[in-house]
Image (cartoon, rainbow, N blue to C red; front, side, top):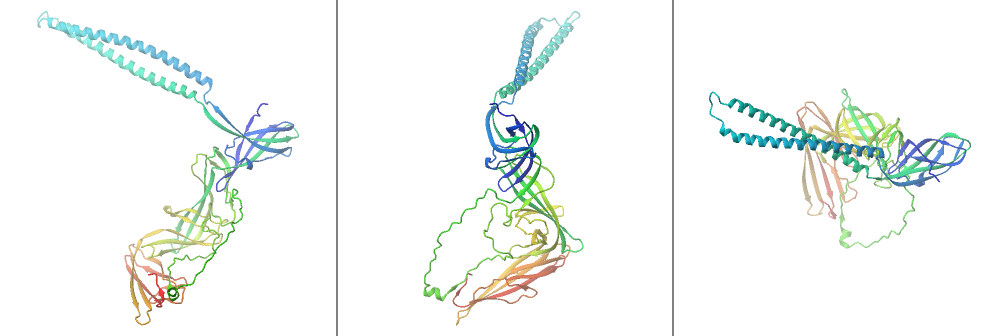
Length: 518
């Protein structure tokens, strides 16, 4: 039974997931009355057979089933006519080379004869009579000039023939290489989708097939551009742009297709939780352990939302709800494996801008902008490029931001502000009670290297106690504000080319049975 003729298809829509893509292709085919198989080409050999779906866009044709057919065959990209043309060109080049070789040999014989003649002529110069009235010197000079001129002509002919023979040899090698490559075959992997249809009449119909393929994925990428208000230094605008960066090496070239980006995970299969025993043990404390209270130092992150079920989400972090982004327009996505950016959305937000200094972490102030996300969809976690105006200032990452959520973004350091932080500590232990007292004094020395005033928001912190036997008390902290989490904040304005000093101190008191970690 002869194989059906394959009909080419056109990619219409591509939906990218975390680790695969769903491709929609359409084709116009002519069908006869009755049941028949229609073969469609253009799909990648990597497609998942279980995901193939087919439907007819015409009511007069019913789709019964669909299947995938793969074929491997050896092909030669050079036709017989091209090979015959190469052989004819090589034959002509060989004939030209033979003619040039004959001419070169003839010229070589003439040059040899001329050289013998010159040698013989030079040997007879000794018999030339002395100059006189009947001296033949003029005839000898004229003859010598004729010999050297003919020798130069022969040498020039030899050079021309040698250049021509080199060109012919190079051209012959090129044609021979092409002829050798023409005999080499390559392995071609073909994939067809065959659709069984039942047509009520002979007609031209349009079929649509969908399938999913690996080797294609997408990830979000963002760019935040800060434009500050010239009149109000505390106000500005953030232009937030989101792209979908896609990679695919499916073997297909998608030209002028609709693109969608989804955070759904079609490949994940729900498994039952692994239920097992969780053994717990206990023991009695020793007398020494009952007397002492061991204090540990922990770095805690202040959170304004609930805990996640998983600390690190795999793939695209969508906050637990599948989302789909559909940019407007058609896009071309080459299958080279190189990243291609597709703009998903752009939004301008009002922001409050401040210079923030965290002396415990860095000696330089940073520019921070706070804004409320007012987009139609949340911000997905991903890499973030930062820009001030038209200048790119750095790269960072953003976490998941829900609709209406307040978030902050840093836009790099402010080089005009410097800070030096020093800590002075004094310890004292009571001789009678054994209580311990630690007093720490923190000094910040600030410098403004710029020509204009700089307003800074300084963030510091003090330890927070969670037990009764340990007390942390803030002593000297003029103009500082303390919150319940132990964070100290202060706003200060530095004049141009000026210095300032900020200080605060706190006291740690512990009972005699408390073991401090520092």
